[in-house]
Each structure stands twice: as structure tokens, then as C-alpha cells.
Image 1: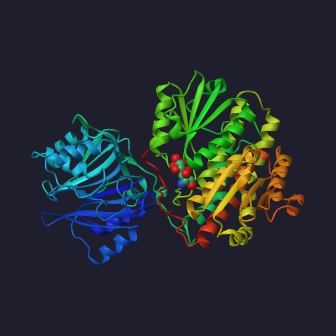
Image 2: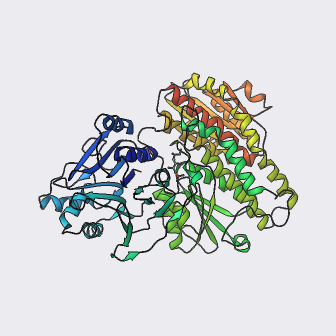
Image 3: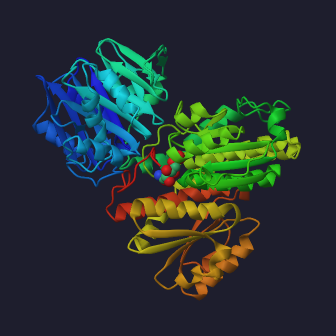
Length: 612
Ligand code: AGP
């Protein structure tokens, strides 16, 4: 939920720390700060608000030095303020720390440290770390950090500098990712790959309960007992580095428009030479054998937010094509509900970032029950990817906008293809039907492009409703999750209260909300529940709700009922969520822009929720 960076080497410390923080800002932007060792002192600059505030301060009052740490914050404990901004220091400003994660036992630690007359200045959980290190420091900074780690409970990654040993940075991680970049005469650390790859492609992923000491010319890793760990660096693919906004006003709009290309790239990668169908159809490289997959009797999907919505679409697809009982859990519920897991079950974790704490915990919960875990992930080598038995990468590229868009439709593509593949393995779908369905899947990029070319229609609708205080999104069947996703997109970037509901549920209470001020997005493409949904739309109409319909081209009837209609190209019902998502994303985007909000960095949010 926060981003930490550390650097030691010969470059200008302001430039290199800020460059890293700009790449980490999507993880949290309530406050930012850096600490540098200069002339035997720790010097700090920090500010509340987005990184630009800190950048302006450093522009006017740059720090000098070649060793430093930096932080961009999503507040967990203690409101966004100057005092609560990181770095946090010990009593005499000899030790500085930046931290990502949560120290669960910070209150008891703080009470005992205050009793020992330590001077606290913030309301953060983080501040106990420099004071613990100060308490345990006895001439060996690494040992003091190790002893402190033994006192901390929770999930955390932090970096430490101290004037007592001014030629090194020490960093540690426990269940929160930390990447180390190896340079020539320089080394750095970061919460994720993006900030490291800007400087070097030689990386080491620190594992759980490991500590690393970075000097200009060395990186040494030890485990929590102090035993040396030998780990060879990985040379990452340089292509992953490229992040540019490509002339768009926001990353979110760029990523909305990237979706046809992302799906096409996945088609090229997974379906090349697979059509016409032959018996060797194998779109995924899985450790699970085809016979093991064919025996799967139950699937449990767990995820959060938009990924959970993708999982709910996945349920419809898997049950429709594979006839496998499929449950879909929100990860933060799954991990505590002690699920009944039987043999022959497969757990599927879905996550764009691969770092969502609740989903990681759900994955570990599933593994305790000895069932295989397949994850559907975007970020290569992320924690979820590394800890799963099998991974399906969605190849959506870096998604910077906090509101997930291209990753969502790439997740839906992966789930669509997986359900067809599993159906074939279970002898439930013949080659002729499979070929036909795969051919329809391959038409999606063009159909997405057709939708995106009519963005101006969405802009007109956005102009009509951007001042609304509430929205309702209705869908049925495989597009009930589309209603949830449309509501989430709108609320998280426009701050308008929005609810997604299964349309059949309206009459059981929510219909009381309908009046002539309430915009109701009714998702009703061609499909098995189309007529039922038309009835629900009539119910809304009868109560003067403002109807924004999403329908399949050629549906003239709906135009006579709805106040606005956005048409999507004809496609199989099972694939319609991939097309429905685009007008929903564009509607949320343009409403947020009309409301003058920061679309890519909405308030209170962060791109990767690495704390529970
Ligand atoms: C989606 O627009 C939100 N930003 C959020 O709900 C997100 O989907 C959720 O936090 C899960 O993230 P993940 O896919 O990286 O696990």
C-alpha cells in the first residue's frame, strides 16, 4: 500500500530517489518523503499530499549525499500529516526508516518504549521500528535490525539508514515484497520492479524473513537467524520498463484504449496455430497435467475488487462449459471462513498486482489445505505468481491507473479460454463447437475497437449525469458481475455512490430507491436472460428512473424505453462482459473528468493493497 525506495551509489540522491518514487506513487500518495545521510547527519524532506509537493520542495532545497531512502504513503495508522509522513526517526535522529506494511503489535511496543523514555512524534505504527533499532543498537546495525524484527508482528518491508554506519542501507521483508537492484558501484531497493528497472535489470527478490545489507559495491543477504543466504541475481526483461502516457490525459484512458491490443496479443500467444482445432489444443503452459485438470471436481476462486468481479464471471463460464461446482469468494472473507475444502478441489487466485495481501493470505490458506493453487496474474514474478503451483499470466502490461481496466478484460479472456480448455479436457465440448467458440473469442479485439470508436456517445451520456449523487447498475446472469464492476469503476474515481445489483433482486427492496433523479445503468445484451432483463427495465421505467441501457446492436425495442442506449456489437453471451466493460469504464472515466477529479490517483486509494 506504500512504496519504499533506497539508493546507495554515485548518482544525485534527489534525482534517483524521486525517479523511483514517481514509479511507486501509484501505490499510495497521501504523503512522501526522503532521508539522506550528509556530513554525518540525517537530513529529511517530507510533505503531505502527492509526490509533486515533495518534488517542488527538493527543487528549491535539494539534499546532497549518495545514500538515502524514500517513501510514498497510503495512510494506515495516523492520518496524512507532516508528522506521520515517512521517513520516521529515532529519538536523536541517528536512524531513519521507511516502511510498507502493518506492524500489528505496535501499540504494546510503543507503550514499553515510551516507558523506557523514547520520544515519539507520530501516530504511525512505523515509528516503533527506529526506536527498537536504537534500543538494540550495540555497535552492529544489522544485529540491531535483526533483534527488532524478532519483536515485530505483522507484514512489513522496511529500509534503514543510520549515521552510526553511514555506508550502508539495511532492508528487510516479511510477507511484503521487496526488490533489490544490483548496479555497478551502486545498489538500490524498491517495493516493486518498476522503480528498480529504471536503473538496472539485475535484480534479487528478497524472500520472507530475509535481511539485506546494501553498500556501494555489495549486497549481502541473511535470514532471520543471521545465516548467510546466497542468491544469484535475475536479469529481467528490459521491455518491462517502458511506462509512458503516450499522449493521453490519463493512464486510465490509455489503458482503456489498449484493451484490443492486449487481447490480440493474448490471442496471438495462446491461440496461434491452434485453429483449426486439433487434438493438441493446449493454450496454457501448466504444471497441472491434463489428466489432473480433467479430474478437478470443485473450484474455489478468491480475489478482491475488480478481480473478484472477473472471478464471478469465471464462475458462470466454468459452470456453463465444464459443469464444475465453482465458488467465488472475496479474499478477505475466504481467509477467515475456514472453508470446507475437499480433495479434487482447485483454488484459483486472481490478482492484477499479484501483491494483494488478502489474496496472498487466501492462497496460503488454500495451500494449508493441500489443494493446488492456480493463479491468474498480471505482474510477472509477483508474490502470488511465485507462491502458486501454476500461473496464467494475463500479459496486460503495466497497469498504472488505480482503476483496473485492461487487466479486467484480460482476466476475462484468460477465464474464457481456460473454461473452454477445461471443457475439452472433460470431453464436454467437441472440436467443432470448440473451434466455433474460439473463433468468436478471436473476434473480440475488433469488436472492442468498434466500441471504443464510439466514445463520444459515452461522453454525451456522462455530460447528462456527472452531477448525480447516486447511481444504480443492474445486470443478470453473466452480466451481474458487469453491474458490480460498473459500480466499482464509477465510485472509485468519481466518488459518486454507486451500487451494482442482480436485476431480479430489485423487487426485494432496492426498487424503493428509484425516482426521477436516479440514473440506472441497465446491462442487457442479447442472451438467455434478455427478456427477463427487459421486464426489470420496465419496472425502473414505471418508477421514472433514468435508464442508461447497454444493449446489442439491432435491439430497437430498448430504445423506446431507455433515456440513453449504448450499443455493443453482437457476440456470444459468455463473451459479452468483455465488451460491456468498455462503456462502463468510459462512463466512469468521463464522469470523473467532468467532476475535475484525479482519475489515475483517486483519493484514499492505491493500486496495490498490500496490507489487510
Ligand atoms: C479496481 O479498479 C480496484 N483498484 C481494486 O478493487 C482492485 O481490483 C483490487 O484491489 C484487487 O487488486 P488486484 O487485482 O491487484 O489483486
